[in-house]
Structures are given as structure tokens and as C-alpha cells.
Image 1 (cartoon, helix red, strand yellow):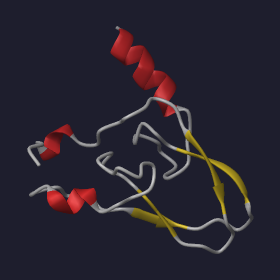
Image 2: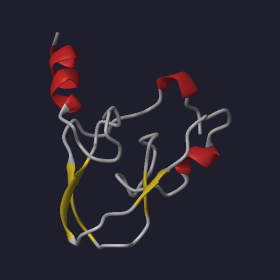
Image 3: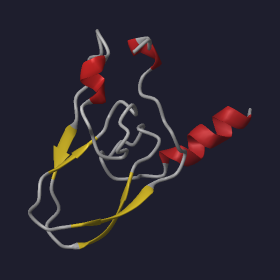
Image 4: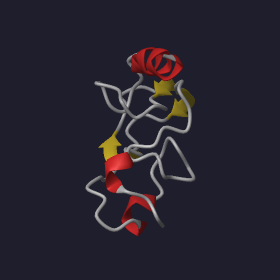
Length: 93
């Protein structure tokens, strides 16, 4: 895969993913944006030499709907914190 690690993370969408998650299950959130199963990791980062990223493992305490970051720039990984709004403004400028 020809991608420069300095171009990571890739954000496929500039809004969160709505997901139903199960309590106590361990999930792996994609931090690089290369996963075909985004927002969850499929280990695509391992296919790119020199990628210093790995998945972010997490679990939730309650079954429910959660909003996982799609832009990969959240300050509260893996959950959306609204950072995508600032990225969208910067891309339009």
C-alpha cells in the first residue's frame, strides 16, 4: 500500500459513526482510517510499512448507542467530541 505515514490518520468521513455496542465486549477502534471496517480496526495499518499506529481497544459499561469518531482527531478516543466540526471549517477555508 503506497501511503506516507505522515498523511495519517485518514478520515473517510467528517462525522461520527452511530453504533450499537454491547457491554463488556472489547472493541478495537481504528486510529489510522485505513480500515475497511471503519470505525473498527481490521489491522490495515499493519500493511503499511512505517505506520506508527495501532488500534485503540475499549469497552463500554452499558449496552447502547454510541457515537464513534469518524474524523480520527477526537480528544476522547474512540468517542466523538465534535472535533469534526472544526476540521470541516478548516477544509472549507
